[in-house]
Length: 95
Image 1 (tube, rainbow, N blue to C red):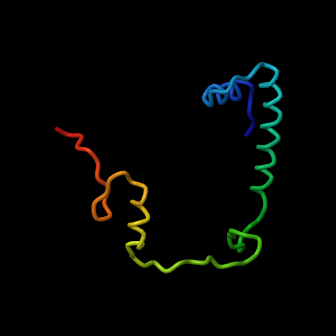
Image 2 (image 1 turned 135 degrees about the vertical axis):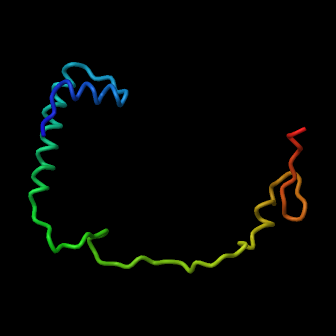
Image 3 (image 1 turned 90 degrees about the vertical axis):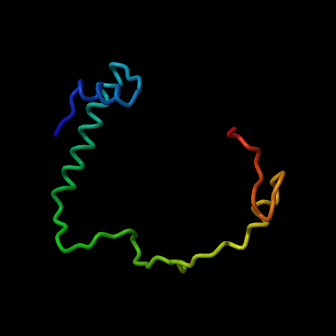
């Protein structure tokens, strides 16, 4: 796949990026180089290789999935101007 000047201008317009004629001409070469590199990567045989998320094998640390109330209701409403039994009190907005 190769990119031409019209494609660069169209992508720039869609991305709302102002591109001069010289910049667009330069980007044609840069984008074609990037796409060439990606095509090279697709030629690599990766059969039998498992996907990895890190270069060093590690397991994810997980917390226990427990439902709690957080025990922080008083801390949450501490800075509220008006509260009632750990609830925020707000003025009525619907008549």
